[in-house]
Image 1 (tube, rainbow, N blue to C red):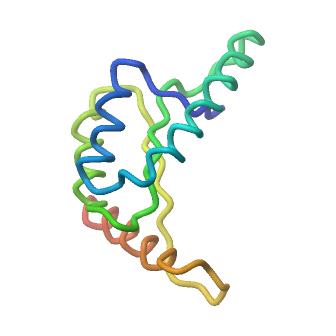
Image 2: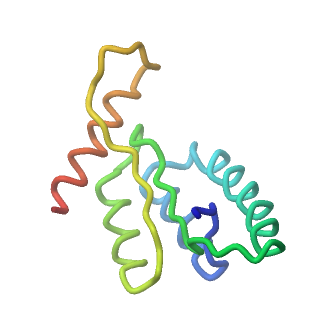
Length: 115
């Protein structure tokens, strides 16, 4: 089971890296997601259900240096039991908000460069 959690010792690094690499505007959304993760964690712990304890959410690749942010997280969490969640994709025929497709393409290219 995936649970949107991150160890407290990594939280400052996570959010400061978002700001440092140009994703300051996405911090409120990420804080909200991790806040809901705390509630989810409590429920899973109460029911004794195991889950991935460090789920590192990547922001949408709009307005920042996504490749460098991804590399910073990989360097930080390479020796941790962590899962880095990205959302790569290519342009589709479906209508999407401005910048969305371009951001997903940046994410896709960043992952290809890691391979």
